[in-house]
Image (tube, rainbow, N blue to C red; front, side, top):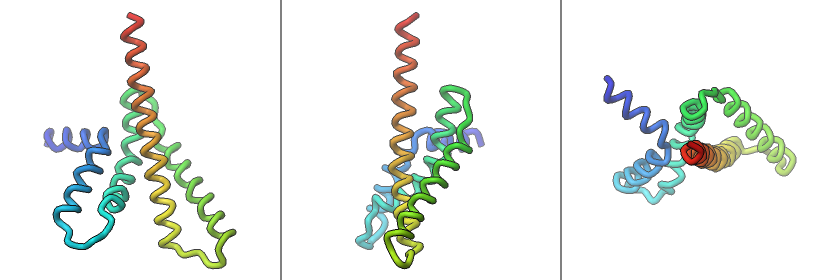
Length: 129
């Protein structure tokens, strides 16, 4: 059980590892000519929703899980209003796909930013000692 917990922790703290593994697995085991990266990114987006709060809590002991969820809801609302204003009829699957892919980009950049800030902060602390 402890090994499973360690593996789960590694995946939560390293979501891009999951992205790579999923991409390679989808490319190897699926015969269809589908966009493997999109499928892997869709699954990784779910992991990023947990990774960002876990990483922030790990480095700074601060919980931002609810904030990440609220920002995702606000992004979805903005996309829905834009879609509603530009098109006569909203296609839900297309809208959800756009929101989900944008959330992947935002969450990925946020995760990278959190890691970079944490690394710089640790370097500054080590150099000041």
